[in-house]
Length: 364
Image (cartoon, rainbow, N blue to C red; front, side, top):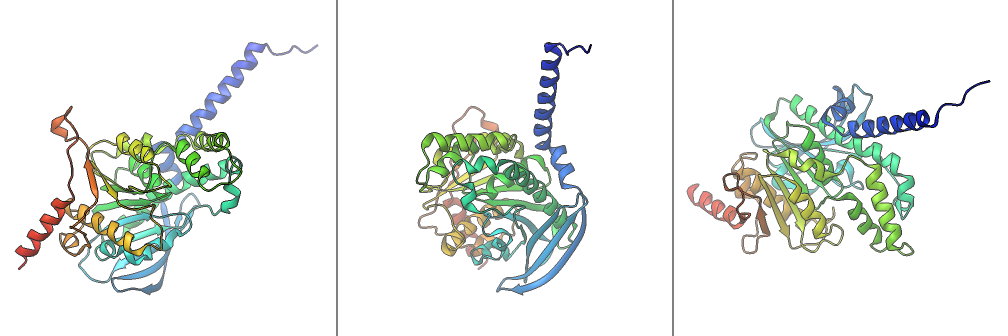
């Protein structure tokens, strides 16, 4: 007659399995876990697809030792002198790699090699409505981990190019791409700076808010359940957990003061989670969209000036950037390292305008 296992042994085995599962979930979000997921760059194929006034454009496919395939668009300056700065630019899911070709980015593309990826998942937006978001959760988790790992694979690619300066590679992410570059920058020490555009932290409340926007038939409790449920499925990929690890490299956040998609509280949560040096620019705008060339150009101009001030773009980038110095964005800086315990210092974009005027006068 067989003996039944003691209840405490069964419970112990279940607890061990749960602990192992949670341990694996958290390992996937560690630097070593994401490095393992990235693998090594094994093959690069490149095809010219056109040009614009400042850049040559290429479709580039990257293949990793893990079997991962990343379809990207490459934008290479037509002028200037290499080695150029290098940029991994992650836009929204809808535009994917084509974000690299946006004309509003000329303030940066004139001086830097830009590579932008397609997302590792394409989903019908209707399937993510309401509680359907939870059903897609496992696929979204896999895609989120892949996207972060692929950002680092694109850093590998930029560093393999002879025309890219190894000490001037930085990450830029907009909307869905903002948390991806914050997480990637937190686990990968190679990027010299991270720039998050129109993004925020606290994934659960952020997703809950987005679900309530213009959604008929979804109640607040359903939105909260779906949003926080997705955040749980994405563990540990919460950008506020990684933002502090970017330091001592600089972080720039750019957000819209009238952004209905990213609440101020979520943007503030991400900013407060970061350590110095950090800056945030508040543009007088709604959430940025790919067809808003003028807004993209304005944001790119301020980013170019911020990067030039830190030596990550050449000085002339600040001279040529389209800065509206008559009404620059509101900005705030983190605490100064030597002033622990003091109030946050103001980072005034007008100082960039003053430096720009002085440089123009000096150049004659």
